[in-house]
Amino acid sequence: MSSTTVLPLEDILPGLEPRLEQLVINERLPGLMVGIVIDQDLAWSQGFGTRDLATGEPADRHTLHRVASITKTLTTTAILQLRDRRLLALDDPLTGHLPEFSQARAVEGSHEQVTLRRLLTHRSGLVTETPLPTWTSSEFPSREQILAALPETEIVLPADHAFKYSNLAFGLLGEVIARISGQSYFEYVQQHILEPLGMTDSVYELTDDTRQSMAIGYSPELFRDETTPAAYVSLGGVAACGGLHSNVADLARWIAFQFRTRPQDGTADAVLAPTTLDEFHQPQYSEPDWSAAQCLGWRSLRVGNNVYHGHGGGIFGFSSQVLFSKQHRIGAIALANLWPYPMIQSVTVQILERLLGNPDPPPLSPPPAVPNTHPITRPCVPGDDDPTSLLAGLYVADPGVPVHIESRGGHLRLVLSPLWPYPLHAGGVLEPTDKALVFRVRGGRGAGELAVFESGEDRSPTRFTLGGFLYRKVMA
Image 1 (cartoon, rainbow, N blue to C red):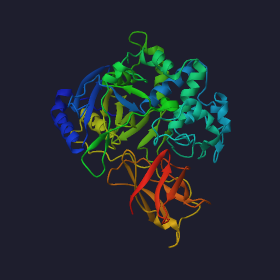
Image 2 (tube, rainbow, N blue to C red):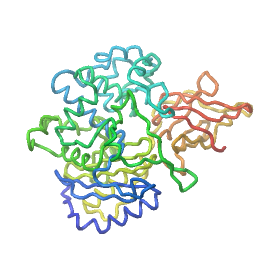
Image 3 (cartoon, rainbow, N blue to C red):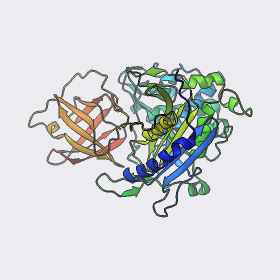
Image 4 (cartoon, one colour):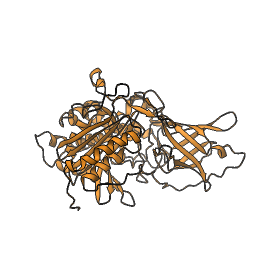
């Protein structure tokens, strides 16, 4: 264990604040709201830039942002609560609580191996999204529509084969919570987590009053300095994966709860018992180089000798990250009103490293793409008259997610773009199927899923769909 001590805030703020101010300028962020948690208190917070480009008004600790996948840590908490009440077990197959899931297609793996624990740790092999329109639509499908689409929903990797991020997994966990508790997912989380912890600003559904407290979210322009206001798209039936609206004040309470070893006022212990809180942070799967590990809901990260727990989020107009050191009882929150923004995790790492005595930590590169861990059975070696020879090029998905498709070593590869290094689907290999212009992805977020290309009248590919996103070809 490290003997590192936490530096006083007055020692780091003179160097930190101007760096964050410059970051907003250099990264073309409309705004960035930052907070530092020390033990049970929000010790410092500051808004940089603006919550609304039209007014120039700065954000404060009560300004609401969409925090996207940070929601998954609350969904995990709800599952742990129900487990502690002996209403479920983490190793229960999903079909035990959601019999309709037996209709899903097991391309690889099996229904019985899709357990609650594997869903919580992204090891179930389930597809990233429901097969219905999601990120390309004005609203995600409803709970009823998602359940009706289970016969077209696929398990695409064997259980425990690889880390495969799945929003759908947490959407289905939200359905499990509702069925077991007899409450809606939103009502359950509000009553059993948000209210006991005093996170009273946080909401799943906006009202006229809470909408006034929201920052305006923006999307970047890849080839220009401008940003454009992002559409507000409801997550519908998968809100348990990312539907929370919160702020620095409430997320500070969420981090402070992670450090509690005993109840302060009788309410915290009712959220999770101390032993369950420890289990919440326990790594379940580690990366081969020990640089990171997946816990129940949380992701742990090693930076030098320091180990942090955290979760990030990205959704139309908003990027978010919470990160904390349980050992040192410190945490950092970063909320930006721009998405995609690939460096949001780096902001929190920089803050915590400075608090632990590293005065100039190097900026982290974006999270690495998951390597290919599945054997490629059919290399792609197109001939001159094959339309796949025209697939290589730059593709962009709204709201500004680029990916390069390159033909290298007999394979078509999804490669991180230096234009805006957001590793959404980069890192995979496209393996041909028996259908023209349809490829099975090996490796990365899209592992096991289908990339389906469309071509124009001249047979030149114009776009492809993958994991709920539509990528349009910009240049060859």
